[in-house]
Length: 385
Image (tube, rainbow, N blue to C red; front, side):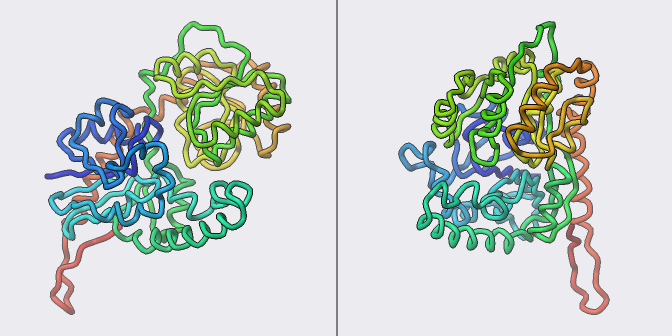
């Protein structure tokens, strides 16, 4: 059986790439299709596959501005030739789910989320306060067209698998499709506690993009009087650095992109790890919990499925700095049981993800290859999920 893996782009090891990494280990002979690949930005398990890229790859310096090419993504993803493959697995948060598989192939979409900016988070990315009124109005037209295409192509996947019940609800709402929930993999063997005594600082590990609400963490830690370390890169870094500077918050440290070993040490030594945005799932809280550290998270989205209130962290109902500041102070002063926190995270390990995805693939292949003959027409029809 020939297998193709499809991913939106490869520019770093975030949650979606960690999903892809396990799939690459499971299908080492698969070929990988992605709009853009920055060599060396992802793990060896991904890099060693045969990687096909789109026309974006040939543009000079594209890794710095590929997000600005978003309107081109639908045409580019549709140009990949997948006709040689029997099984297509897309890991999609943008357009990968709309890749064109062969008519008789099985296409399973592991959906990280329906694309946020085209549906319910337009203002966070393209609102007037970010682009100005004229540019925002123009982007609204573009995003409406993209949302329509996204919905019209939802039937290209035979089956949807969602990263959380929260995302399954979004798939139902925007695509009118049901989805099986398989939680993403967390490397609980790598992320584990040590004997280090945690410090009294807060940690954020995140892409620096609007919906992550890093600004909220900066303001909350200023109110709480707690130092904040921020790991990650993204288009909002300059804006966030100015915010910290303009509010005289000198205890914010931007660490940029760090390797796994450094991130693990930061988790272990953090007093608390913050998740201020509404996440579709959120790998970071579970990596932190695997290291025995408590999490302060916004009580919306995936955090409700990954953080146990008052046991592995604190959930904050109001997305305002004062509420998060209060939660950070309480979390730092509270004696959490690091063993119980770690035990909870172990339920989300890599082996569990691989097994559950293998079950999904096996039962989908079995169902879609069973055809029934309709009495009225004598035609063979294929079951769909």
